Image 1 (tube, rainbow, N blue to C red):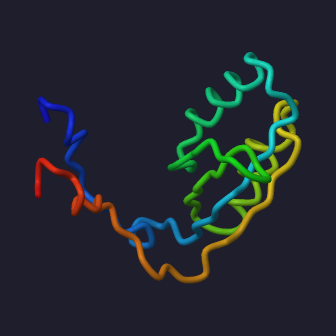
Image 2: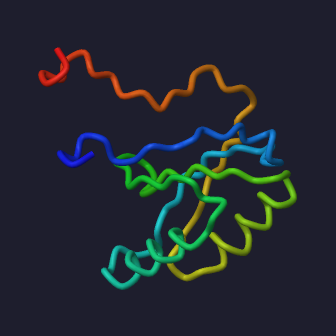
Length: 116
């Protein structure tokens, strides 16, 4: 950990076992790219516990957000109350995960020289 390669040690929780049965990916487009607008969006996203990942993206949308929610009603409330209805978000497109084919937290270290 001291050299910065390992950021943290964590336990991987099974989402469904703790009542988080809905996983979704939401593409978010901002209404403005002014520094204050972007900073406000980042702050709001950081404060929403159901949003477990948020990445700035290239392409048709500005951000890709991964959401874990207890059910579709809770997911709908999150979209309508916590993402939409704020001046910084122009629109969202959401996709509900039907089946998880692969998920890993492992980093492919085949080409990392320190471990080769």
